[in-house]
Length: 486
Image (cartoon, rainbow, N blue to C red; front, top):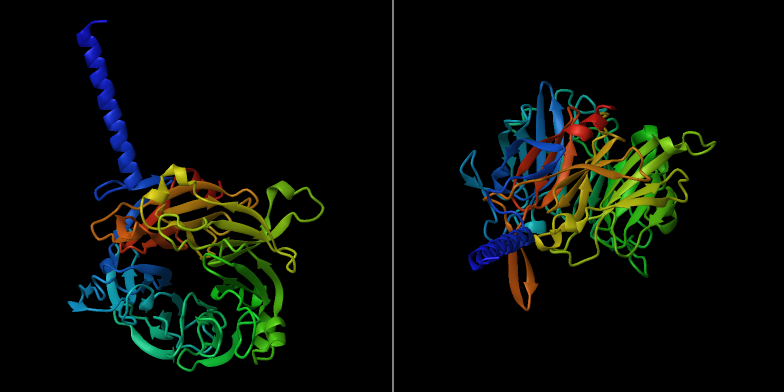
């Protein structure tokens, strides 16, 4: 071989090595502004920046011929505690964004309802639920009601029949220790409000209200795990994260306790909960409990999503158990750059309600995107909660922070499998996330897909904790075939 040819090959090898190293470095650092989204069987339909506000829970509601998204926000950042509302030019504490998503390719920002002043978890108005007045037993038939948590201090109900001009109806609390992910039964008006009533030993438990007439709320009782109630002694059980009720028809409430540690799924008889004695004694708190699943100290129970009466194809010829009651449990990652146990998705068989058991789990493989080194949180956070037929018991969507949203085929909950994902692009407004290394902050910019919801039309809505906004998606390919029952 000639020296010239050898030198040429050596130079090519060096160029290839340099390119490979550069690619690995870029992958380790994660996507940059201008890079395209990462996706499989999901595609971007529309985007709304949400005024660069850190987003938590979206609720998508059909109002006449319109579809409106009500999006709760956490507090502002140290750099921008109160972003400017472009609709009026005023700096406003993060609260609730109201967005018309009738045309998902062209979402229109309609209004911002300011929340509690404060930054990060200390401000904002994270939670949203919406009920039509025509559904509520004693509501104004023409109204549409938005229930939201306000910072950590209380709850509010707004009339949003004209979503461009929301009107305050009622305030609840005002002296609470914390609030979070409540649930509202539109058909009955019963609301399970995640609160921190003074005197209780945890910052999050449940206040149960009759909000069938939102202008005249009536408190029914306080509820929590025995050991959390005022005046008790001994260890304090894990605090509440949020409940989901099946209403009077299902007669069950599924409470999830814990964020990233000490998770508990509690299954409660709804009738006994609402009609039993209200005084929070140990006996009265235990009376409505039907079953409890105590999880590992490594994982929490952020979302407890019931999928009841699921036919399991594998068991269709079995004499017993061909149909199962399933609860999907989603933990919440809270530490940046994998500085905790992996927070995942768990499927529990609750068919024998007194003895629930975990039957499977699922996580995004970290190596598939070098997610621990991308910056920000990597791990599960929440699932969609819509029970509309388009996706229910077929596809579930999991917000996975810097790994975006993941679409799971849950038709066989004993063997869940991923059939699609979408990781939003990093945008100019995406905020940094930091860890401390050798006493110094190390910050990286990464998307943080925080919450996800779906609507009856089949659109998927994801919002971002790091100020990246709202993305509206649709499933394609095999994922679409599953949704359509093909």
